[in-house]
Length: 220
Image 1 (tube, rainbow, N blue to C red):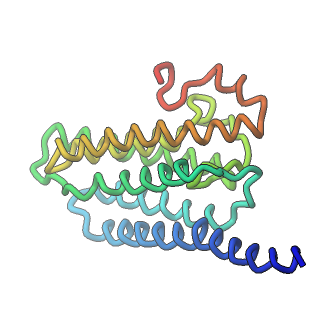
Image 2: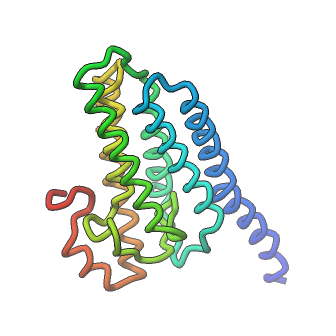
């Protein structure tokens, strides 16, 4: 009787897991990728076109990996950890809502450099992470090669670098900068939840963490 009663609950749970872990992120990433692809054709400069092309590539990788990744070895059980992960991703997107400058100058050049370098680094990090990629602080494996030799969360480093470029090129740099600082804080909290789960699954993570920094090589 207990097994029969539990079965519908398990099926409902599976549906919510599918919607939350695959369908909703896929829709969000598809929207962002489409916007980026359209932006390539409407870019006022080569650097802007490169930014949109790299953005589309990164969002496209997210779409593929979110749908081919295996079930997690360990699921995050903290509602706060889930909320922080989702809000941090939305905060990254929100920085771009303050608009971009069109007057040129050193700030715009620096913005282009950070945008392109950050996105390229993020793309390389996602490619190395592969099927271990995830939005929520679940555990699907331990990756320590490539950019993960430098820092434990290179994808977030690439994203934050690119978003800092958005801040420098923003028409509202103060508000964009405050939102970026919020992104940094949220990502630090997010990595704390991720690392607690990884340590519980992989005891060797402590040794890896002892020789690497969280986000910035040699600093943080």
